[in-house]
Amino acid sequence: MLKFRTETFVPMRSFFHRSRHLTLASLPFIRRLFLTLCGAVLLSAAGGARADVCTASMTDINFDNVSPVSGQDYLASGTLSVTCTAMPLDGNLLLLPAISTCASLGPGSGAADIQSRVLVNGGRRIRFNLYRAQSYDAASVWGGYASASSINPGFLGLLALGSGTQTFPIYARIAAADLALAVGGSGSATYAASFAGAGSLAWSSGTLLTNPCQTSGLTAPFSFNVTANVVNDCLVNAAPVAFGARGVLNGGVRASGGLSVKCTAGSSYRIALDGGSAAGVPGARKMKNAASGRTVDYLLSAVQNGQVWGDGSAGSVTVDGTGSGMVQQVPVYGLVPGQATPPPGDYADRVTATIYF
Image 1 (cartoon, one colour):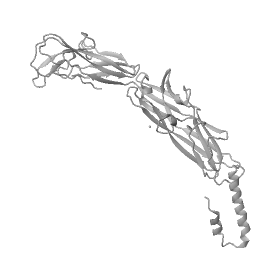
Image 2 (spheres, one colour):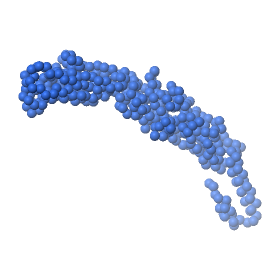
Image 3 (cartoon, helix red, strand yellow):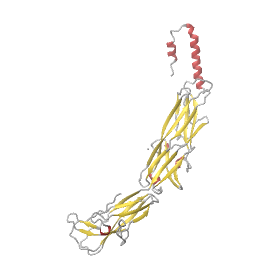
Image 4 (cartoon, one colour):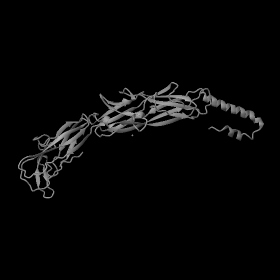
């Protein structure tokens, strides 16, 4: 039998409460102050003279090493940071300044729209996308101003000349199905997407949070990159070579099994078989009865009646191939040549397959 290794407002009544012990001579001052405060609120509510400034920055996103044959999705993440500063002009007092922002992202390099973003290595491409939530569905793809796919932080209650920063996690995914045919290089290959200038932050000012995508025309760009390192990888599964029950070994007995090999597209591989657990020599393999210690000679080859499949030593050969990213079937042919028939019993051997890539 073969076995193989294989992402502060104080209410005004409080003001008057604290002022009730003042003399009547103080009332005009109180009245003037009250009117000044109201005027400041009205000025702020009307928008006032504002020169608010906002910026955005985004960390790079790196998937690290990804295997095209693993059959799994790969996840990564980055961080979007939005910083806004309330800046009144002409000495205007702002009690509750607010800034609404809208962080938009375009398709990135090599893509026509936000639903078809790609990582590129020469002429090779891997589909991926960026998401505002870990649901990783189409509704959460990070996109543009005109839709709900933008990221809309708001800054409410900033003090005059004060700043605030908000951060947002951005999620990235490569689906297993989109990675299957990715080609590695000599050991690995880097795929990348550039979002240079693809990000844009727009903002508008007020005293209450408004629709962040109804902007005043003020915008600031931001950039980042997404990368993935596609590695050469192989997976191997085996089907046993079973000769079945035989009475007398006076002629050749044949059987077949096979290997299922899945390697990164375009990567070369070589498969070697050892000599088994009974003999340890590819050209002299034996199946052994555990109880009696008696043995049966047998041969393995990659084609019927071909050279012994081994590790390249003592006249044996190895089997070479090139990965396709999909499962490839590699047959294994077995032969028990005519020989003296040992006592009845179960005879077995364990052969280890090693794949080099």
